[in-house]
Image (cartoon, rainbow over all chains, first blue to last red; front, side):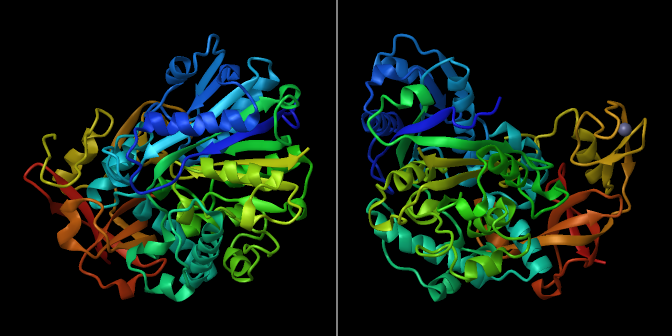
Length: 385
Length: 137
Ligand SMILES: [Zn+2]
């Protein structure tokens, strides 16, 4: 049995994204979740499955309380960091295909900018999957993702001649899209020169190679194909979905090939399941915690060969109007860091034709990726039914 | 807060890793070697990935290797590192076939390249904690 065509994204919702929400993560998450439920044309009590983002912040129990759900039949956590949102599509599709439940809500909320949880370096250390880097790398000064990922980018540059200006193209085109979005934290135009003049964080990654820290929430609903027919909006069918874990998943230092992510294992499976080719993809929302991670994923997805990602982005392919428009909402780099949940929301809007000024004309088939926890990858290929 | 505390992130060794840090204190880079098949592994962990044996011994590494990749940190993500910016972190292919990461000391960033030969040195952070660094060989 394959999960092809067994599930659909039926509802999406989000809050305003900001540096300081002034609201609790629970309030933010309920606001986004109710928006997703309304978008789907459902009643909150129709939600019978929840996949929470980690075990922090808001958990399934909060929904039983706030929504008055009488019979929550499925709850899970997909512990893949930024790959969790898309991995949750696989988890939810499996649950609805097996008949365990009908409508799975997949939410995130965070006060990542203003919150008391601390900035990213201190958060990483608390996570059990990073115990080894906590012991063997952080004491030496490799504390935050920018520092842990930079050697991957440097290796790519040394092997393939990839340049900082090519990374800049990703930041610039993403900013352009954010300005069109209407709900993005970054609203000023960005040029290649602005990127090149921005301060170095962890060489070769500059400030504008790095994503935001954000306050806000978003949510989406995955429903069984049968029940999706009852929902309000056009059905966005899940054609192919997979997750992949890289070799040496938690310690990049020990990874045999520094330039190969978990997505390289997942992408061929998702394309095969979906029965589509790369030329069929009208729009792609590609996890963008750092510009380099986008470039590497474009290669691991198979849109170009390993080492050719720099030339691919420099060609203008990823811009609106290009051969493969990506991150049409502004991504984590310029819309908000919602751990890629906002990428799923945007893909659904694109395939419904609801993406406003950044709408890709006649977008019918698209994909979304997740990347997290030092290299885990996930992908969903979706189509308007 | 632990026995090593000195204003920077410190290791919090377990029974699986304490020998590594004890070795550092004696100026030795110790690596886990499988007692059954001889495969060397790093970072320390309970099971040999080649034969699944849980028996191992600690063997001293030569301490030589070549640069696989690097980053130069210009931003302190922990206040303890503010005073030493910018600093170079190198990912090194050790002669024993595993990698490790440490700061490269006493060298200018202009010398960095894939394959640069380096060797390990030991720096006492506190009286109880010694950290590895690399220098150009
Ligand atoms: Zn063995």
